[in-house]
Structures are given as C-alpha cells and as structure tokens.
Length: 168
Image 1: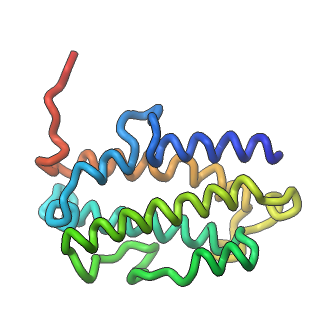
Image 2: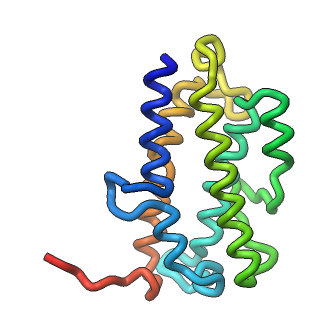
C-alpha cells in the first residue's frame, strides 16, 4: 500500500508544482499572478484565484492535520487564514508580501500533506477520515486531482494575466 500511496503523492507533487500531466501546475498558474490580480473577484465566476488557493491550502491542512503524528502536527501548526465554508475565504490582506507569504505557506502545507500521505500506515489508510466522515483512501485519491481541478478553474476565470498566445 505504501508504494501505491507514494506513487499517488508523486503524481500530486507534479500537479502542484512539477511537470503537470494536465497542463500548467497549480504553482505555475499562481506564480503568473500578482497579488492584485489574484485577489480580484472581477472574474467570470465572481470569486478570486486567491480564494480558490486558500481553499486548496485549507483542504491540505485538514488532511495533514489528521494524518501527521504529533511532531508533524506541531510543525503544521494551526491554520493561519480565515477558514470560510469549505475553506473558501477572502484574504484579509492583499499586498504583494501577503501573496508571497501565502504561496510559501501553500508550498509548506502541500509538502506536509504529501509527507503524511507517504508515511500513512496500513490501518489508518483503510480507516475513515474523522473530519469529513469518509474513507481515508477516498480522500487520498481525491486529493491527487484536487490541484488539477482548481488549476483549470483558475485558468478559466478570464484573468488577463493567464491569457497566453496559442501555439498549434
């Protein structure tokens, strides 16, 4: 089981900040945005890329906080942003420094969630996630595609900074 979960974590790493199989990775997409653009809700849907990224960070924090051992949870710490429903929230500060700090946090929480996935024991992986009351394996498989889904969502919001010349 550990080998399969490690393979899933490797895939999630690629979708997060590697050579994504689905196009641009999440961090490549977010790095294309300055703070003002990321915080803007003048999008097709009326919410911001930053809000979506906060949701991604929150979901990884929830998973990591349940899977990590006590030392790992101490390293993870309390979630430092407004939680909102489902982790969707509006950033309280939208400066360039706050955006850079948030992206650093997103990388850190991703690494901790992937470490937890790679280190999970057989018994825990076959159990139920207490926070969401669903099978842990289902959560771990879902987590692997979560970044891809939200990357596509952000890329389709109509943000000028993400428009690139098409090459055929």
